[in-house]
Amino acid sequence: MTESSDFQMKKMPLSNGAGHMPALGFGTLIPDPAVTISATRDALEAGFRHFDCAERYRNEREVGETLQAGLAARGIAREDIFVTTKLWNSNHRPERVEPAFEASLNRLGLNYLDLYLIHTPFAFQPGDEQDPRDQKGNVIYDRGVTLLETWRAMESLVADGKCRTIGLSDIGLNELLPIYESARIKPAVVQVEAHPYLPETELLEFCKAKGIVFLAFAPLGHGMKPGLLEDPAILAIAARVGKTPAQVLLAWAVQRGTALLTTPKSAARARENFNISSLPEDAFDEINRIQTRQRLNDVVNTGSPGFIPRGKST
Ligand SMILES: NC(=O)c1ccc[n+]([C@@H]2O[C@H](COP(=O)([O-])OP(=O)(O)OC[C@H]3O[C@@H](n4cnc5c(N)ncnc54)[C@H](OP(=O)(O)O)[C@@H]3O)[C@@H](O)[C@H]2O)c1
Image 1: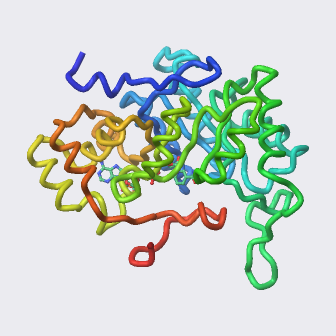
Image 2: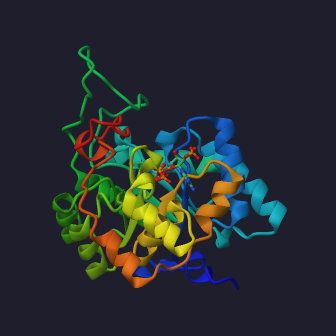
């Protein structure tokens, strides 16, 4: 075992007795199909065993085929990987939830999912158009369904065994609380943007208290520059501990008790991002003291995903 094996092997227990999620996750938000395939293959080869997908990413088929081939080639069992996908905004009506789940399962070529998330709390006009807009270009929301009604339909997926556990994404504490209170099956995972510029400490504390896995996306600040990868404190710590800035940021995320999703797109970066280990306490504390605050993805405000162009985020 290498010195970094603690973080590489770390698994987060899921509520409802639904097993464990590997803390280090590979995200598949990759627009190009060929890059999706090579990056997914490289991630599996580097050691990632947790794969985050979404119907909205429009590449579940490529991810699924790459995983099937990778598992067969390496003799890895399906049970040894953890696969998530997400219900898109245009499928929030309860009668659309199971068909959307089955369609994702079919595209991924799997017979069960480890985790199914409501991608955002925003319901869009139901239908096959993922980005419904009116003539002025405004998103057409669906006021005819509540998040709790969608959650109830998610709960019924768990009963038949094809969906091991369920959760929410792009949600704040105020919207999470009523779902948590009313849920028959409590959310096991909450996936949100989190990094040293957006630590989401209150949400993290709530999740820890309730046994919910807090799953951080954009732990490298989505690689935006200028940004976290060039932050002077991160650069100084990286030089001091002999790690790369990316490794420092990913280690910080695991050390504070979150799971994470990162999207390296080359074999070298996949190995770099998987090869992480704990930071000295003083380095960890120094990152906690970073004062910059910046949200990078606007999805929590609108339901429309998208990293905010540089210089416009608040
Ligand atoms: N729930 C949601 O609404 C939501 C929203 C966004 C993302 N996500 C999920 O979270 C995943 C991760 O998000 P993210 O893309 O923001 O992750 P990220 O890992 O923070 O950022 C990826 C970016 O960082 C760069 N990068 C990766 N490894 C690097 C390294 N070692 N050194 C320097 N740069 C590096 C990549 O550059 P290259 O491209 O050049 O390799 C890419 O531009 C997504 O794939 C998706 O699964 C969910």
